[in-house]
Amino acid sequence: MAELTSLSPSRANDFIQCPLKFRFRSIDKLPEPPSQAAFRGTVVHSVLEKLFTAPAAERTAELAQTMLIPAWEELVEKDPDVLGIFEGESEKETFFTSARRLIDSYFVLEYPEHLEPEETEKFVRTTLDNGLELRGFIDRVDVAPGGERRLVDYKTGKQPKPQYGREAKFQMGFYALVVYRLSGELVHTLQLMYLGSRSVLKSHPTMAEVEQTQFEIDAIWKDIIASAESDRWRPKKSPLCNWCTFKPLCPAWGNAAPPTPEITKIVGA
Image (cartoon, rainbow, N blue to C red; front, top):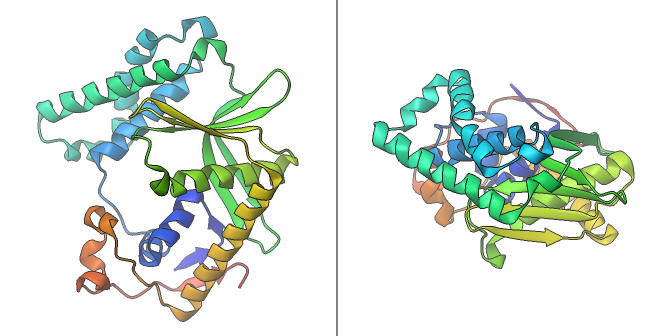
């Protein structure tokens, strides 16, 4: 049994990308094997979060590099099965080399000794008028001396071409909307940090853009409700299918999807 009562940026993007993928993740909650890329992102995020627990003057690249192995060990202890994604010590060494490179990239983009974040890994949630809960984690929240607020998200991949940047843009707009609903404050800056390409993408949301994001979320949720009520979760074929865990269950590729689990609650229906 499942409930449809909340939405995060990643699950909303799943539905836009492929409604069946959304179903498999959000309703069926099918397990997905971990990948080295995803695990590397988790490890690097952990290092950057822990970096800001150190006194400002000590936030050096050298200190961050010493945090890599402890972050790895902590995450492996929580989920020992993740070691199964590595075939031998050589793959682990390649993993650590690439993680170290991403950590160094962060220091090319910012001077953390000059920052004092209000919060890292901040969990935010708010409930819309229709009962839908919007929720997610913001990597970092900065507040300038003048009170302007900046939301920061780390990406361990490379900055995509503009035509492929919709998902990240929507994610940041989603967070700007949640913060606005919680505080009545329009966020000053949304900042995406692409460590893989050592680039930063900044934007300054307007009230019109925040309202547009809520309109988009409302439309996505209405489509999710319609899919749930009709039990029609149409797959969308795209080049991304080649990396999808659920391809062996996808009718678009000649396979059979399992029956949809019972949905016991849908808010806004």
